[in-house]
Image 1: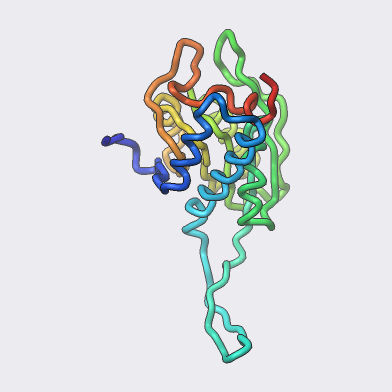
Image 2: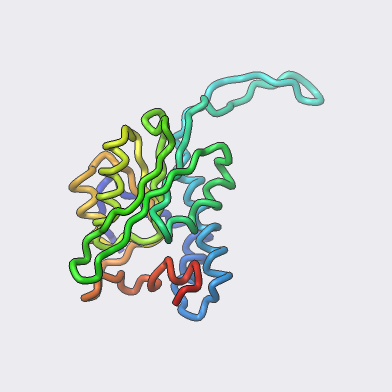
Length: 214
């Protein structure tokens, strides 16, 4: 099916990712398995999202002979989960970029207005010098993401990528209109939101399912 998405939106169709997302959607999936899958999917997504990291030529001695190799050019990275559900994506990303610094943005959605309420923001002091990966499993209306990007840019962040597991068209459209230069990686794309702004079919409340609070 043709999704007709903006050029800055990348849906990762790798079979392993798609299989794991399917298990996430299942309401019978346990908290333990759900949490593990969110981390695994995040690691697989991170592999794709870091594809354009700069590398430089280097040389080493193998046990056999001299070899020319590639190594990362020293780009500094930052992972910034949106609390609380975004925390579930951090360990998976750190598994492939263990030297990354981790910031945190705290916000929640007002159930009456459906607007994001900010309550916390702590970022690495040198955030202006880092490639930033904003982490949130779900993008519904896009309000929390837009608010998070604004907060990070006000503190100096420049190069920002968004990693989410499931995204809805409404949220993606709003984010792209507000920040067309932010590249968005998602594992699945759903068209609809219900009257409570939950993604349909989605997977429910990601935070509750990660932490077993509902």
